[in-house]
Length: 476
Image (cartoon, rainbow, N blue to C red; front, side):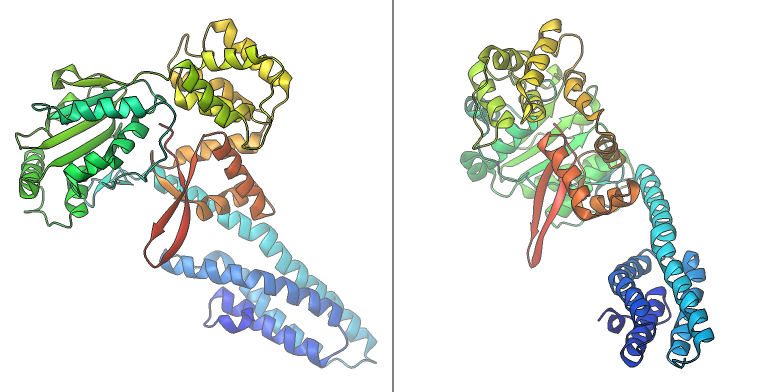
């Protein structure tokens, strides 16, 4: 029973003690049995939640000042219930008065869980958001502006549509003698990150570089020290000394790479932003069989070899679009095949656009498909005037009629880029922010975002630990 799990003087223990008394009195008395049973059901359903909150408060070193008032009510409630057990059946005046008091006690408990607790949770959620936004770490523990840096290779993927030739060509480019750094360049949404991940899992690449493949997501905030610390941590090596300056960071990186050599080394710097030439220069050293692969939306001609990833051809685009727009067992018979062709051509071979637009049309009536095709035709393509991110606006506009879903998507922006978010934490936050009565409603919002390819659901597996569902916020 919940009451048996709680001890001490914290709020959970106080509620648990009331529950114990309610159960005992209910067994001994016929009077008030219905009302006491109702109070018992409320306490049994809520005490496990209080216990979990208490444990979290201890870890976060937070007190229970906001709950002192309800704790006093519960202590008085315990006394009230004990007194109820002493009321005689013929004492009608006292029976009526204590019935009113039990009703008042039940109302106070309900008010606490329906009003006070959501307010506390909403406040804590806002504090969490502020703390997340304020995370501007110095990289002292292998972080980039508060985001943990991992050097692990992304999980292995099934060969995506249309990248077989590109994988072979990129591998050939990287393996050329005299090529120490290769730049994989394309607009956002073309599949640069996907192709880089496939390269790292390629059998020939694995055989050549073995466990010396390092994969770092750089993004806009370049913090050299955070990346170098992450490299050391990945190989479980100690720094020569604390980093005293930027020059010292570069020096220790070179020593680290030399210590791994002469074994071949592959360093992947994913999503390097424009105007980062000076940042990239810090990773270039004259070390035998040391290769760097850079993925970027921009070209870096100073670094020589550049592989430009091209959009998918029409046949591959159509295959990818259909896999996103239709469920496995769903009929693909669209009355007007020209409609499908217009939409696919409007996506211009961009994998991300094909998947997002396809998901947004999945299950929609034919009229919606025709409307989308006409919208694409008006501008010639969805990329006519802006970059890919703006071109996907038509798919994001479909969230306008779903206010809560759109707010849930915006909430993801509160987390650092490329951050994996525990699903349980996200579900709890949405339930409190948007007054969702059941966890299933929040999970449904999450699933809908994933179905629209606005987020990715992954499962993290660790030894001796059950798989944990995580949300990947990166879109490219």
